[in-house]
Length: 225
Picture 1 (tube, rainbow, N blue to C red):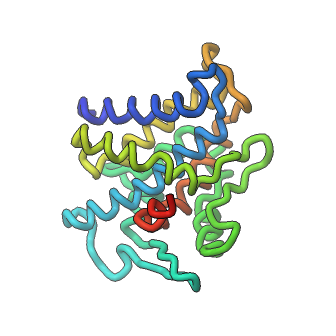
Picture 2 (picture 1 turned 90 degrees about the vertical axis):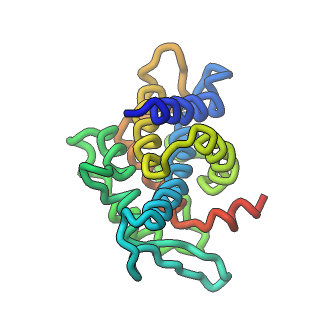
């Protein structure tokens, strides 16, 4: 792992810990986990576009597909996005590969990532789109879309300053999610949490936020203010 990647991972983890309560001494765990997942989803699309532009991923009709809803909003699907978010390999793990390690082998089978992807497609353009389906007390009070608008610009600026290679985005977000897991689970005595989240619940929430947010046209979302 390069020094740039180590700094990016530390920046991501520290960013979400600080903004979601470390400064006040109590971590808002569901909001922190959901926000990290939501932002990772957007950067999965950034990574997919960069890999397509560089010719690392094959550019075909199914690589990145634009879908428009009745209200004119654009959403993106396709093999390139899946490769970064859901279906990685040993050479280039997807975000889900890192998240699955948080849940552990025994629990990972209970997280239906395919079901999350299907629900995202079915909810496209509707009120349920991008709303994590989590039981209380693990449901975030902050919408993933709001987290995206709040956090993507400063993190994108930080990655640009670091000159982080786009193809390493999911590695950095996945490693940061693994680091956050200790705190969100309430396993770090120095930091209290509002709702200690079992690791399987964290993994599910990360993907409930990441998958729909990966479909957004960020240029439109950021213009919403």
